[in-house]
Length: 137
Image (tube, rainbow, N blue to C red; front, side, top):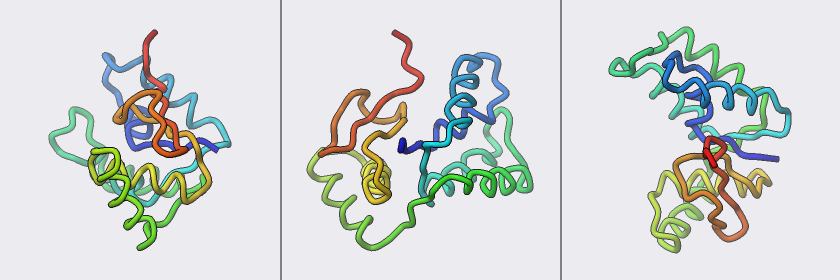
């Protein structure tokens, strides 16, 4: 299973013509069945997608409906164990707590690959590897 970070969900709903390649790639990713995400990803998606300063904000109903649709994938819960593991990972790898929480949520649900453009592409974080699905070679 591959773990999807928030930016994949946000590109999938973007209407910015400058992001067309990323929009298409995000849609391809979300058409797959081997994906998982976390409560944190769903929370971040809702907040960022409805942010008024966004060029194409969603209204509450649109964002809520999308969150409900994303629950078709397995969702890692926020637990004390995940939180404590994230604190340790943050310190070990010198990354933000929120990025560490993504990695640990992925680990908790059995994913060894995180699709994200926010972490170092190709980096292995103690058995969880990051791949930037939007990287242009």
